[in-house]
Length: 219
Ligand SMILES: CC(C)(COP(=O)(O)OP(=O)(O)OC[C@H]1O[C@@H](n2cnc3c(N)ncnc32)[C@H](O)[C@@H]1OP(=O)(O)O)[C@@H](O)C(=O)NCCC(=O)NCCS
Image (tube, rainbow, N blue to C red):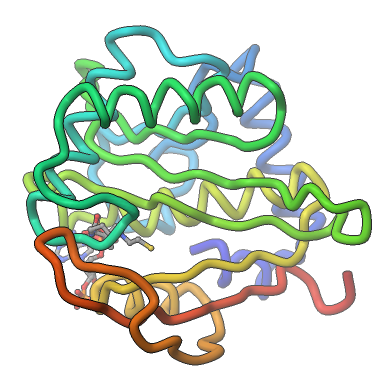
């Protein structure tokens, strides 16, 4: 895992490995992470994670399927039921445009045949006094692909993207116990809960939990 890699090889080694992978990929649309490249991660050998420059119609469709599946499964990730295909696609078109403007990174986790099974975003803090900070958001894995290490791999890839961009302080919030365990395992620190922060997809308030991670000791 990235946390272990930082402890074992240092951040510089990690950046070097990431940069090598990105260079080898040729451009930002190609794989930036694969199980083969990071055998420490316990995830399927077919998995590859790509950074989207802009999303094609096929990719918008795949991302929308993942988002709708998560919301239908009860995840509090910004939407209420019913989440129509049109609304989900509009969200991803907006995220894709934002990525094209350089405001965020959209990652996709894919099967060998190219089907999207998961996604995560790294959103750069825009204020000039936070050039070292980013938010991790919309980490989603389709229910059919869960519990195989894809969430952990997406988080590791998100952290690599942040490091490459010189962002060393990451923040996120979550209403998911499954996600909380993942963040703690990968070295994130729990700050606390905000009660009644949002609604569950089917209604009713849910709290959110804030986490942060420093990718090196002193930003
Ligand atoms: C949170 C989420 C992204 C995790 O995705 P995931 O791909 O299932 O994550 P992982 O596979 O890395 O880890 C999940 C569990 O599977 C286990 N696991 C990982 N690889 C495994 C394998 N090869 N065999 C068996 N179990 C495995 C992990 O140890 C972990 O166990 P735990 O639940 O006891 O902690 C996913 O549950 C999700 O999309 N939830 C809905 C959306 C959401 O709430 N997202 C968070 C927003 S902040």
